[in-house]
Length: 131
Image: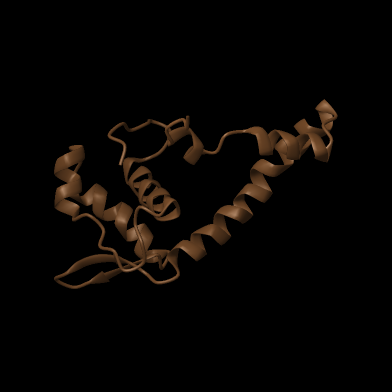
């Protein structure tokens, strides 16, 4: 998790969002435990109640399960639920702006496909050049 906090939203919400990003990125898998509230609070120098509130949002969203005395664990299907929500959010909030820009610039579908094909993926950037 990133150690920097921004002032645009409460820290507990940022903690929740960081865990969501870790699930979507595959850093946390179904059945994996979340880092303990105490460890996160100490590492990021925040109140344990702040961490707990962020984690509780994940429980409320049924992404995480609290097992008494054992900790909190990623629920089965959490990534799928998140992907559904994030896709809907993208289509509702970001896609209209992207589409408007495409229209304004007069880009064709073929130009977009060509640009996507020539853009290096994040995996390509990490690989060593081959002789």
